[in-house]
Length: 194
Image (cartoon, one colour):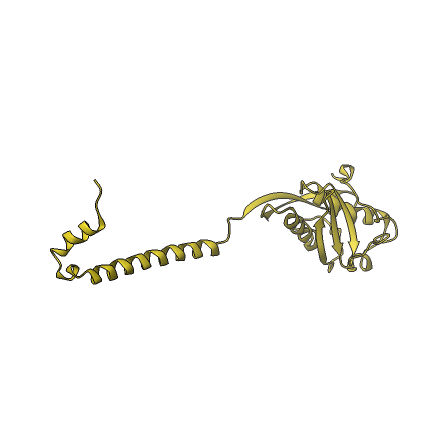
């Protein structure tokens, strides 16, 4: 059964003398429509202010083992926005903070992540501050562990990253501490993981 707006209000008009005036009915209808519109706008604004639900992801961050000879994975749970660059930054921040357990640091304390981006060929570019070279303890094995803690943490956790190129303060460098040539991208090295 369909009702006409006028017939609904005319039935009310018999009970309330104010409804007999058409201007009053238009004013009432206008007020209610305005309130409904405002409520709809407010709900849209509130929905836009709510942050999207953040997914969590279990990742493996690689630090030096107790003997400082191999890499061991430390499990971390990080926010996963679905953006591979953001996930890469989260992994690098975990590496820069150092291990939570009884493993060893692979990146000198005070090193900053200047930038991280992913090239179209799947190369992840990690730009670190020069503290990584200036404060590096040196030694071939230590340098290898530093490089592959970065490379393995990124390549094995971020599907879009196939290899990693390390930059120092935005520029290519020959080496971190005089032993390993870092002018070219590295792929993951599973033989270093224990």
